[in-house]
Length: 291
Image 1 (cartoon, rainbow, N blue to C red):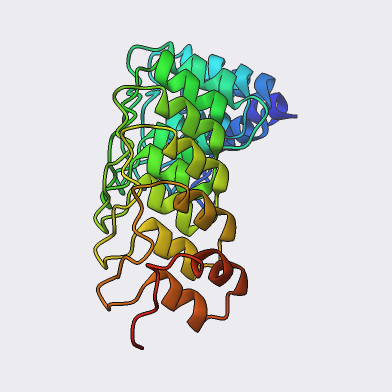
Image 2 (image 1 turned 180 degrees about the horizontal axis):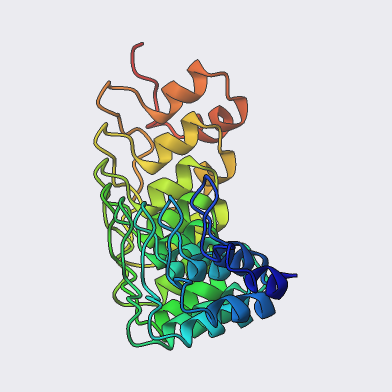
């Protein structure tokens, strides 16, 4: 049907819809490899034409997990494999966060190119490895650090690193990979003064907390800009298991106050968190501050 339509002089093979999606973009996004090849055989079809969001046929094929189409498009000299969309997200970035069965294969294909930057940031300063840790894509993280030699400690505009992002989301596999690196700081602060441990504690991820505390160079008592240390954050959120894990450390102050003078026990009692109160109260040094 495509060939019949293209046989007419009054059919524009590169005409986009209202979203800027040309036929080639649509075929690439759906993985229709034969149709892609037919369209690429035309001199009046732009193989790198973006839609209104700046997403090219390659971007769509990569994100949707169509390896065959990706390879066909990359075989063209006039296709830019590192062209970002209007949010600054390249095909590699967007594939790194996609939960598709073939995303690892496409990441490898893209990284095999010498003109694909493994550390290209989007408009928020987030790189492909940041994207992969956000989604817990352990395999993609390993590929980016191996083939792409990505920077595992690069901060976004908010100061967050891939490690703090993985810790925030509770992705233990990604945290383990990053902690094996000497160039991924386990104590780096974001603009709010939050460490990876703080991120894991506040969101209730005991597995990640244990991994981080297993490092001798992790400070378990570093507060954020409001004076709230990981123990206090875990207590006010009711994360009893994390409170226990932190208190097992001899270098965590159970009575540390935040900038308002409130302690972990103060928050636990004021919020009626009986389990956390029971863990904190036997500690004679932990007395609630005056409300």
